[in-house]
Image (cartoon, rainbow, N blue to C red; front, side, top):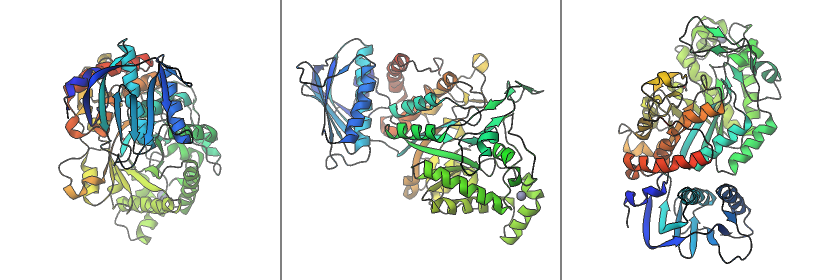
Length: 519
Ligand code: ACM
Ligand code: ZN
């Protein structure tokens, strides 16, 4: 098999497929594309509709009758030929394009490859393409990106655009960070003040947190997504084979919720949604039964809205100041025979895990949930480097790798950041994202399968608009896609750079913003 990367770099596949074999001839595409599949299969029809919607933007037309001059594309599911979930093979020759998927997801990812091919021929202004056979499968089952809408709320159309961008890079998880100190973005029927009070803050910090004295814009900010809108997003994501992971933060990053229900804090309030960024001391009281009743009801409603198997409960950056001064929290430490406030946090998370299991959901938490003892079935989301993930995997837990060092897309992309739009800090160039390896050597060979995959995080303290969010996401997401989808031995930065230059032209055609000054 000819696996020579360079032969196909001009086609600009990102992420690179597992293998591309050149066949003998060149074939000529037509502007009319006829898609053939089992007419009774509604799921394949959906993929065909998606395919058409996307290729028609590049001037191709779906042919519905027997026009002679058309390119035939066949969609077939075959579990005997394709062994791995989400995988596909595609043969392009003078009979047309035969796409065989293990499952619908496999067909969908094959369609992404096809779309890239069609887009490139359009960009290069030619219709001739090499005849070839592609075999492709994902390296990881978790290929994610997170968007924080607590700090800055993004419009619904942009959430859809993020889902499109994620799916077109063969990624399958959209982690929706819905609650923060600065705003709560999902209505909960049982607690109406979450939408009337917690969804808003009275003003917002101007400039960087480190610029003192702080200045504010003196303008009320906020809002929330209605359940109808959330359902629309869930449907939209489903059609693109993306699972949405809602995040409801606890016990910290909860000031907005506590502004609405101050009785759930240790001091009883009053509190206000935060107007500055950072880590804040007001957290849910772990000694108050009402906290758990509140969170159980919240999680019950959230579980009913989101069909996916996971709920993210945050768990990061929970200062223990209030707990160490709170009578109720101290009583809980005594009655539960806990050693300290870290074990109280662990008690909190374990209790929430049981609640989620009742609703048939698995708990995901940031790596602080390791402190004081891990909840038995929790998935650990490692962000403060890889160590939390290594420890969790070696202890038999599933892990998602999101280290700040490689996938924090709120960091600057250029070393010389003075001409860059204001960002939180840090330095994460494209090449460093490309270097990301989710399975470090320190994980026991027998435990490596517990690394579900990797994920980029986009925190939005300094990101006010969709354009800015896209600028921070791209092209870094392209590099991440190659890490989480492509096989390790297929990665090669110089090949990626050539393919990326083609791929960026696609983004340009789709009017997606990206950083042109990557390094
Ligand atoms: C995080 O970045 N605080 C998870
Ligand atoms: Zn307390």
